[in-house]
Amino acid sequence: MDRIDHAASELREMDDLAALSSPIHSLHPLAKLIVTILYIFLTVSFNKYDLSGLIVMLLYPVIAFSVSGIPIRTCFYKLRIVLPLVCAVGLFNPFFDRVPLLYIGNISVSCGVISMITLMLKGVFCLMASFILVATTTMDAICAALRKIHIPNMIVTLLLLTYRYISVMIDEVSIMTTAYKLRAPGQKGIHYSAWGSFLGQLLLRSMDRAEELYSSMQLRGFCGEFQYADVPPAKLIDYLYAVFAVGAFFLCRMVNIASFFGSIALGGSL
Image (cartoon, rainbow, N blue to C red; front, side, top):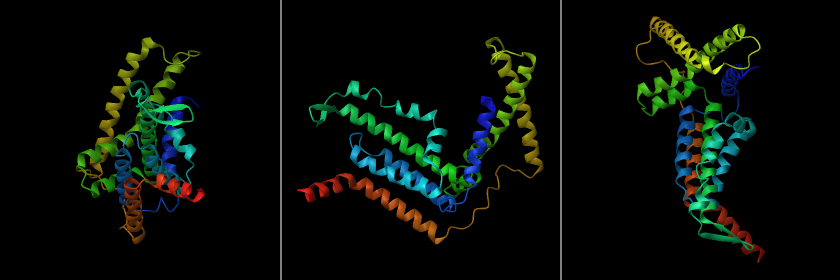
């Protein structure tokens, strides 16, 4: 399987994950969306040196992955391209912030090292929370939830069409790549001299396909706004989930739980 077919397969796998059955999957998409947004907001609000307070925020994605039945390794595999970019955000902090913050034996740990680790963890935690939302909720349901909180219709429509059109673009690239290979047997990849014409043809084919899709949408009654997934009304469990999760996030943000339990453990040992 070449890279293009592999990309199409991974896109279909995300839809398969969202179609699974679990307590997380069955929750109302608006509840999951609000919880995810607030989780990301509170996670990034931690001080860059508050590593002990931030580490507790790992509990939410770990519990969510466990309950949903989706392995955490699937998340890291799907995000393998984005994760290095996120982790590179604070990579130069140790060179600019060399003030010692703590000592481990005779080894001093600078503020830059702590801030680097904190920034990396923030990015990883936010990506994990975003992935669990997408992996347990269909894109139609997410867009319906976005409209519930009055996100502009144009933005939501662009998001949905972009997601749906990715598979169409992948199919077009696959067709063109196969045609190129048949005309250049034994050649590895596409020669750089053909990159310009290849991209130009892809653009023209995509525009033609887009016109066909838009005509089909108009014939089916599209008038500027989609009729998104039929989302059932929120149940008591959805309200409880949202309230409990948001309350737990605020508690973890306001109270350094790791230091609290650490001091209790040290006090008990003494």
